[in-house]
Length: 263
Image (cartoon, rainbow, N blue to C red; front, side, top):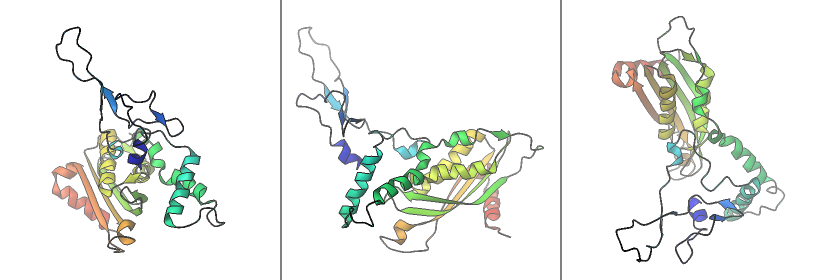
């Protein structure tokens, strides 16, 4: 879809982009080629200036950003989003004007606003308040079985499961609900399970500065159960260890034992 939108802005015949590079009813197109003057070598003053040529700079993938920048093309309006849903309904072979589907575009856009609300949340801010009055407690803190629902960035099909987080505090502990909110923040974005696992561990290490962080995510991917090989009930497990958990295999064993010990 990005490629299709991007193709709507072209340089003019002289190599320049239309002023403001605006299209799609005035939306700004930041994916348009960036104009950079070509290097100018030593030449007589009378020499004609070298032409300006477009240079494309690859943007940083949104999944690599903790709080992604606003969508490159500007966030579409609700009306544009609903029109896109109607287009998909027609492509699927149905009639978006029939009674059962007439309100579906509005419902889908409203649902997406919640399902992908993580793009508007700041995981760093969730961990900023630390409780230091913990009577010198410095052993492991484990929050396990945190349910989450996310969407595969490859097919936009859900995957869901449980996240388990452990850390060794140094300057204090964070509210337990905040760890669950961190999981939700990253889950409510288009994701891969591997990226989500790393993001959770990275933000905890960055903000809390613990002696170690361990994260395990186990999930079932409906893109594997509903399409492709169509194998339901298959679990995917990803882990990320930092600090003492990464340096000491015994700490990893302890973490995994605590996660699996349901008694």
